[in-house]
Length: 273
Image (cartoon, rainbow, N blue to C red; front, side, top):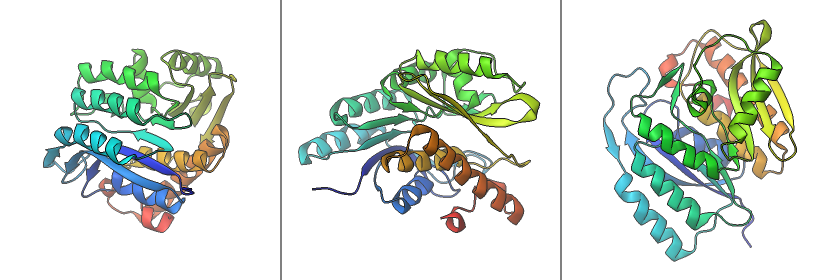
């Protein structure tokens, strides 16, 4: 009987800069979870500040990988979908869901589309629309504030909103299909930032405040969702898992800011682990 939880991580691999698979694998492995990567693309660096990276698109491999895993009987406890480089890959992930979603398989979709009010360079409106099909199939989604705005076709702004407005937004996201939502980086009253959870079935709503530093680091969303998934697979509630993920990333960001390292390289994950 298999005792170690197994996660398929459908993500890119950035060869330099701590993000995507290079942080997902060590975080989940440290938490006692086997990570089975489903690489969507390989980049020489991530896309945030190193100029134009060299890229190899792996769309052509994804279908064959799915078929081979079916042949050998791979079973999964969680499917974690993140960065996708084109619209065809979204269709391939839906096909992957169909073939590997068991009765107890947790599907987590991080709708990686953009940040700071803008879509990533690799994204377009077709992909933005198709992303809703993945969100519809998810048990848990983990959008940031920008991605939530795109999913709901709301104007993006960083003006603080109150609790009732946040609740309304969470319910609107739930109507897209997911059972649970973890919304990251919400601008709250008094200049505070919060991560917010909502469970559609129980109507559980919660806000977890965190302390910001005046600097941005790539890969923090990947670190957050990886820690969240690890905690959920360990049996934690959505609220407790989100608290742990918030604390984990906050600790890493603070330590990296104090160290004064190149922000493009991401948080100092090695020391954090």
